[in-house]
Every structure is written in structure tokens, then in C-alpha cells.
Image (cartoon, rainbow, N blue to C red; front, top):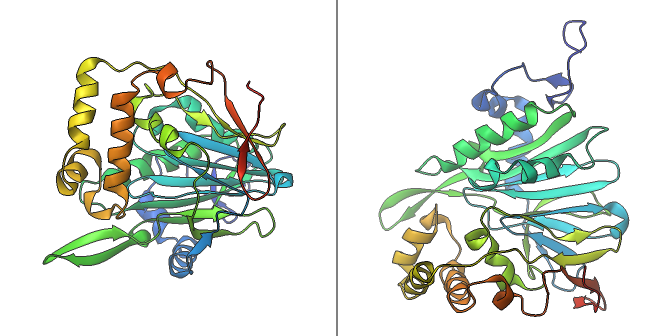
Length: 317
């Protein structure tokens, strides 16, 4: 309600709906509730999710919707200019990892609506005041999209942009960097925390190829009915020219590779160059679907939680 009139469901801060139209991001971040919750979150200790804990870490171009009954620790990490969205409702939660590409994918965006018909709390983490302005564009698009939906979303956390930026001296340069780049939520606590995952789940290298050679396709990581982790092959075939480009990039030094492969070279973690090399080399060696997923036959590879790890199951679907 606003001024005694019923308003359509949209983005709320507390009990107050944002005004219709394009979202004023600066005004949202200046809201006292948004500011205090973001600053408290940014100062919270980092939670390390141990590899033996039942967990799902969503990568770029991936999503996961998990009911609370599955008792999974769910989240994402390595968000520099990206934004991680956690949508929490009565039955469970959804995690998405938004970058410039997935912000243009309607199917990916609509995964945020899966359990939100009765309203949901929205937690946004990642994105900082990067020098190229990439984060600001993603945040503007993302908040505006949620504001346009018929479902009611309450913005419970927006650790974004100015609230997620620290200045660090790098070789005499004052460089902006993100404060928080990973987040998780558990079924027991249902509290969102800064996080880092010791284990990002099965087939991490193959999954990392998706955002570089997927043609815009995205994936769901969890089958709620079977309570299984799923890795979905996608159809792709790299031309010989792209194979050569990827192999050449994999031979670059760290600085050159960061400059070509990252939207935020100064903000990437120390493992980024070597992980990117492994991904690039894998794609140059296995440049099509059947080579990257030889045993899948076009069907999802499935993993069940067993004894502290996701173990392959014989069932394909």
C-alpha cells in the first residue's frame, strides 16, 4: 500500500515499495536500512564451507534452486564485477550468479521466480565500484528487473558498489577492490554470510567451460525431486580458429592473461590465471560436446551425497 492505495507487487525495502519506474540505485544504497545491513555484512567474518559439508557452489552461467528439506549449504563465490543473488522464501532458496551475459538471458533471470509467488527476500552480494563501471551496469539492470516483476521481493541485503568497495595500494596505484566476493546460506540457520567454499563440487573444470563456450545456455545444478547434483552437457563446437585462440591465451603470462580474460584484473584471486589456463586448454583439446562429456550421451550427469562427498550415480537423465 502507498498513500492508502494498493500497489502492484514490486521491490520493497522493509514495508516501503520503491516508486514505479527506473530504480535509482544511489537512493537505494543510501537508504538507512540498506546501508546499515550492507556495512554489517561486509564486516562479518568469512565463513569457510568445509569440503565435507553438503554444499553447492554456483558458478557463472549456473543456478540452483534447493528446498530447505535437502539440508544443503548453497552459495556462490568469485564475484568481482558479477552479482550473486540469493532469493529466500518459505520453501527454500535460489542462487544465481549474474554477469553481463546472463543479465541478457530471460530464461536465466526467470529462475529467480521459481518459488517466489508468495513473496521472497532478496539478498544481493558482489559488484564493486570497478574502474570500467561494469558492476554498476549489472546492478542497475538487476534491480530494475526485480522491480518490474509481479512477485513481491523485499531487498534484505544489497552489499553492492560503494558498500562493497575498498581501496588498496597496488604498486603505487590506489585501486578499488571488492570487500566480499562469496556468500552462502544454510538450511539450518537460513542466514546469509560471507563465504568461501573449499570444494566447488563435481566436474569443476568442465563446468567452468560453460560461460566461455556455451552460446548463452545456462544450467541448473540441483534436481530437487531426486536430491541430486546435476551437470548438464550443452551443445557446442568450437571452430579451429577459436581453438587456436584459446590455446594461445593459455600460454600467456599472468598479467597478459588477466588483461584479456577478466573484467577486473586487479580483483581476481591468486588462483585465477592457472584455473583459466586449465579451462582454456581443456576447451582447445576437447572443443565439442561429445569430447568434453564423452560418457553423458547428451544427458545430465548425476551425483548423490554419500559419505561427505558428491558421488556419481549410474542414472542418466
